[in-house]
Image (cartoon, rainbow, N blue to C red; front, side):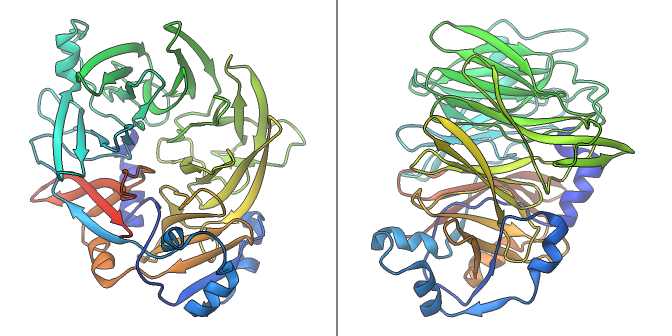
Length: 465
């Protein structure tokens, strides 16, 4: 049961908080830094060592004070965090990183509802930062009924989660996907009863269209130009929708058992990238792990617009299980030159560079200052040299705002202000990744919080004004 399996829930609670990085800031506190040389976890102990504290002056000297514009340099500082008052309603439980933004800067949120009584349903919301208000755009189960396609056997269809990103494509519509969890097995032996749905929303008319129904739950989505790609689990099946021809293609990348990566992404050529897990062949070493006595190989796969395979790169320092407890790719962001930086559950940071229409994958190091940690998302402040993220080291219970210097392969830790840190340390609070910002450069992180005996959606706003 993807985001609520016992194993997953126990692990999440032990983490305390999973969150994304966006952009940022106000004032630089003493900074912790370490060099990351792009090596594997087998060398992490040697890399970690004692932490060095550097002053603001030293930090400025190291990054070169002449770099960038003054208004952009503010994003190298820690953000201020505000908790938004999201409307509460029975059955709504969490926002699992399902966010997006339209061309007007409005923020979209997919809300999950796995405890929604007899008819649990995900719902789609929109936040307008200009008037600081939330608007309900529709309930998935209800919309399926209005469209006349809601299945009735053995009981009325439920789509309890919107787990994917919500992305605007070339036709101006917002694309997202949903999933059911009835009868789903976390070991991958059984898909959910009603699978998943791919939707398009007209943001002006608020009109919904169901594009496709998949046998798998649709957990991740990317869109670029005329192509929309959703990822189904189990098996990491990619469904590509062509906006111009209204056609669907599919390609199975393959995984083992119930393993699921939470994200896929696309580059400016409309090539899509996702995770493959297969049985390791004799003699293979790179990207090879042992899962339940089985040797498996984990890789990042690149597919072109025809879903033809271009590359298959092994991934080091990838946390993997045979159940839905694993996270896979937890965050990504694109730089102005078209390169894409992404982070996996372990905190391993990678960059995908485009060189004369060819892509090259390179390990950058760790997003954390002293090796492995969790980072639920990434943001590039102004798309060139730096990426940032909110990190949490398992068992430590301390949340750090980290800025990674791609040029110098260094991660710097910036201290959040007391009010922001206190907000993140509230008991029974889970914030989970997002890469979404509005037109005023305010960033959004989502999740759930404890309300009485249950859980409710939670939205954090990060600002650097």
